[in-house]
Image (cartoon, rainbow, N blue to C red; front, side, top):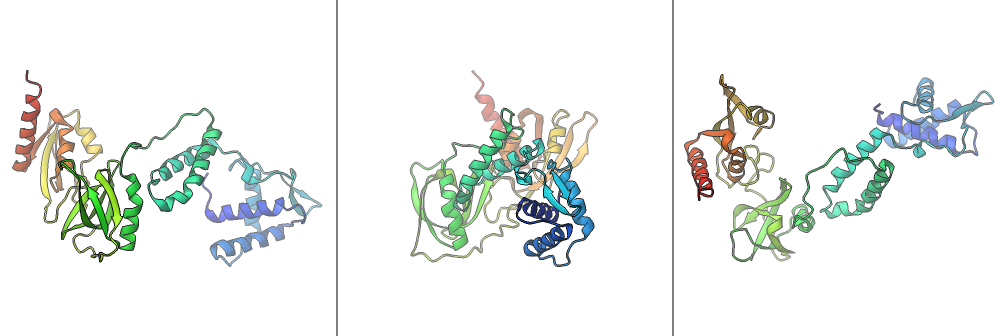
Length: 336
């Protein structure tokens, strides 16, 4: 069952008190200790009621939170643990706890490329080891998309810090189309992840460009260069009409209409190409016409190509022509 933060503070405070074998604890003492803890950690100064602490003790004694705390009363007024070595912090993890912690570890591991996270790496590793040991031979219940062989993650930190500290970068970069790498001055403004690849958006020679981190060969701080503030795009709105990361200044969103056959329409409906997607028309044969308002870029084109024979682009004509051309090229690959 869910437990709020204040209740957890009270449970931990009561546990700390009862573990102190060198003092006798009355209910009033426990109330005072809990009130002091809530004031210290949460700034709550109104105190707590006798009934609240009594209910806390009952909750700790019960199985609801998995504590089963052996709290007893002696001399009709003093509280203690019957087992002097007991503590709620030693309580074995429940299956739900293990599941939640496993998911948390996986989420935290996604940020391993950042140095501000490196200080936590040891903690996460130990947590992961503890969870694994506790789970023994249980199988994972969650699996995040990841690419352990992805290059460029070692540059995440220097780029992140350059953005935060407004530093200019000297980058050696080679695009997929270039024969060799070239070096240039770059003003970084935004890091963005897409499909498990990282990109950095920034200024080069007055224009907005995005660079894939896995195509970067080297980065150095250009100490003598003065940083130019971002006046090219608004990171809060720039991606609103975009699928993926490819967009140049001046590119305008267009209304794209497409039909999907009966078998695949439910998939497209439940996993939209873009948040603007809406149903325009549904036909008797089960096919559905959808509409989205987006910038037409290579990522969108590849999304459509992934549906191949199950989707037909209806407009705009430029995208219709592009798709038809792509399919003609693809067909030629299979003609002997």
